[in-house]
Length: 148
Ligand SMILES: Nc1ncnc2c1ncn2[C@@H]1O[C@H](COP(=O)(O)OP(=O)(O)OP(=O)(O)O)[C@@H](O)[C@H]1O
Ligand SMILES: [Mg+2]
Image 1 (cartoon, rainbow, N blue to C red):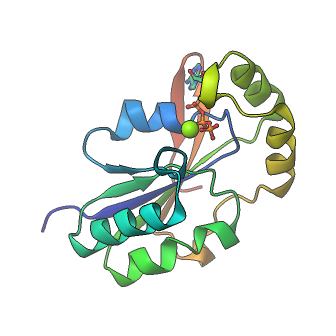
Image 2: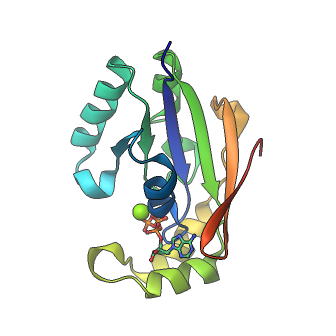
């Protein structure tokens, strides 16, 4: 059977999620981003489509705690997907610096980084993930650690 995976990105603004999706997950995974879709109902519709058609997809939102992730994990499991989390080091200083170099709509107000970092909880197996991978920025690339 073809691979059917739901990937949940978890990380504060500026941590590198979208860049990682572009470099590592495009074009195999259907890309679902609330930022891009700009509506929860459009997001829910696209996610439901992916689950119904067994299309691997990635949810590129900040998804900073278990509560936010319950929007995706139980439904993905129920649909029979393997559910994988990639979580990004909530390094506030580094994220602020990367955010400062962004322009236009990409750039978020600086305080959001601090408030999201204070609420950030790494993904946990008890939430239902089959695999949890930690991502750090290494030079201008990414380092992925499996199983944490
Ligand atoms: N591995 C990397 N090395 C150097 N710079 C990076 C790396 N990954 C991302 N960046 C830069 O950091 C900034 C933030 O990255 P990105 O947009 O991917 O973050 P994000 O987690 O998607 O943020 P948001 O939650 O606000 O969408 C961008 O300017 C990007 O070019
Ligand atoms: Mg992004």
